[in-house]
Image (cartoon, rainbow, N blue to C red; front, side, top):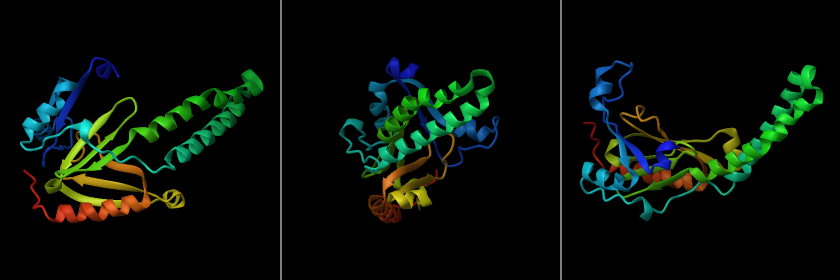
Length: 213
């Protein structure tokens, strides 16, 4: 939040072999480069210099949002969470404040609902000519770009709740995924769109020779 208020950002780059296991792992230190502080207005310019021919312009991207049902689903979770907090508050604080402990859930309910709405708006995905871009985060916003020749696996996941809401999660892994702490797991996508994207990503990745260095 502080960096966003100052109009600054951080750039991190992952390469194969750059996801060392320990804190002192030399591969993690030597193969994960980043620009610790840079003005947001310079990010696109730096990315285009790091990857010749990228021509990245976030404002020109047509982002795909989550399923139209996402807000309703998350709001239901928020309401259930408020009820649970009220029940726990009632029994946990009954000795000290009596039934007033149940108000904890009522007080937190607007905040939980606001977080649900913001969460549904924060996740954005797009497939570009070079690969995949994913944007998420309410307080700590992150944008990840990966390339077809770097894709290691593509998965389509559906929990029982996803199937009920006709949604799916599209997961894209690269050889070095991890150090940037922003895995491309696009949740709450419309099921039909997710299945279509899954097939398109498989076809696009198959046309590119894997490059891990």
